[in-house]
Image (cartoon, rainbow, N blue to C red):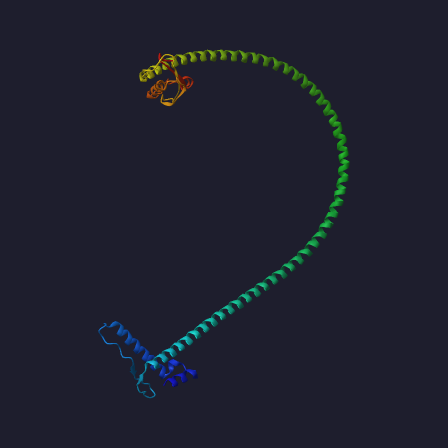
Length: 334
């Protein structure tokens, strides 16, 4: 039986149309079902038989069932695999042929497209050449016509220029006479204007001197008034500053606790910087007494003042209280 199956394969008949191949496939299906049933059973069941007998019935004649030995089964499976491999190889070959046919089709379509494009460009080139030739001929005819027109205009221009020169000479003589008369009139008018200007200049100078004197008097009056106002403002600011300086000294004195080690001759100078609200912006020591305890009490007193009394007038504040100094001595503040 195996020899017969190999003969069928070698003769080129389709293996799935052979009764023997059908029998082999049926046997393989039965073996697969049996193996699957065995894998699903419990370990206590007996293993499946090592061989399977089957009967293949065809329409032509009955074929007796045969006992398929395990070796024959393996050979059939190998042949089936070989047939399957041949089928897949054939499919791959057909797929490759299809891809090559599509590539060839695309190449031909691209070649046709390029040829059509080339023909189109050639037609456009010939069209451009024809249009250029027609344009060249039209330009030649136009140039000839323009040359004739220029000759005609040139003759007319020469005639017109001759007439213009004649008229220009007459006009020149007339204008020279007119210019001579106008120059004489302008000279006389200029002389009159010069004399008038001199008269007006003298009058303006006199008026300017008078205006200058008046403005000088007004400026002096304003200066004196401003100086008086400034002196009054300065006096008022000084009085206001003295008042608030006394308030500041009093506020700092209340916060200053002189150390017991303070002796005559000590002096600490502090630079105070305030905000317009009276808040302390900065305090720094610009002169030390040489006694650390004395210096520290002066700094503490300056910082202890919550809000310094300052005037509401911004100018007075900026001039006297934006930044000022305090001198601490055992005898008091200065």
